[in-house]
Image (cartoon, rainbow, N blue to C red):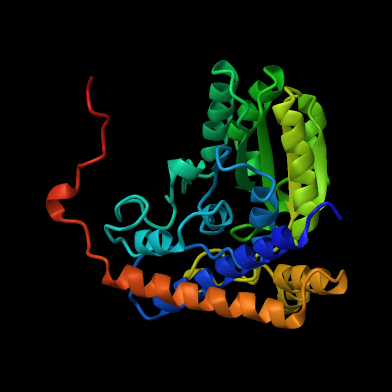
Length: 326
C-alpha cells in the first residue's frame, strides 16, 4: 500500500470530522437553531477525503450544494465552517454565505454553489488559469449524478479535453438526484462511460473506499500535472440521510426503500477505512478510538465557537459584494 500510517490515520480523522460535523448540524437543525436548507454528506465521506488526500494545499477544489464535507476534507477549519452555517461573522464568508458557500482561498477552496453543476466551469476556469500562468496546481470539482446531465458540465469537459487542462471531474454518484434515480436519467450504464466521447480517461471507483478514491485521484493528479489533460472519475457512493434536512416532511415519495438504505449503510466508509487500517496492522482499535474521541471534542468546540460568535451587523450587508475599483 502506497499510503503510510500517518496518511491513513489522517484520512480517518477527516472522515470522522465530516461525520460528527454533519451529525451536529442535523441536531442543530432539528432544534430549530439552524434555519434554512442543509444537505448532509453522511455516507459519502470517503469520496471527499480520498480525493483531497491526493491534492496539495495550493490545488483548487469546488463543490456543490452537498459540500460541507469537501472543505473539511481539504483541511478547512471546522469552527469557521460551523460558524458560517449558523450565519455568524466568524464564518468563512462572515456569515453571509451559509451552508452552500464555504470558501477558503488560502488552502484552495474556491467554494460551492446551490446551482446544480455551476461549480464545474469554475473549476475548469481555475485549471485554465493554472495553465496560462504556467503554474502546476490542479483543480478538482465535485458534482453529483444529476449535475452530470447539465449542459455546463458537458461544455466544461469538452473545453478541458480540447485544451488539455489540469482539471479532475469527480462525479459523486449517490444514486439519486433528489428523488430521481440516475438509472432513469443517464443514458449509459455509468457517468464515467461518457469520458470517451471527450477523449479523456473515465474511471469507475468504489466511493465507499477512501483508499480506492485516493488511488484514482492520485493518478488523475499525476496526469494533470504532467500536462496530459483532464480525467473523469465516477465514485459510486450513497447518501445515508435525506437529500436535505426536512425534505421528508415535504416530499412523501417512496423513491427508495428502507431495505435499500439499510443495505447501503452496511458499507459505511468509516467502518471500511477503520477495518482496513487495523487489518493491515497500521493502527490498533485503541488508536482509532482515540482519533474518534479527539474529533468529537473538536466538533463540540466548533459548535460552541459558532454559538458564541456574533451575527453580522445589518450595516455590513453589502460589504464584500463587489470588487473595490482600482
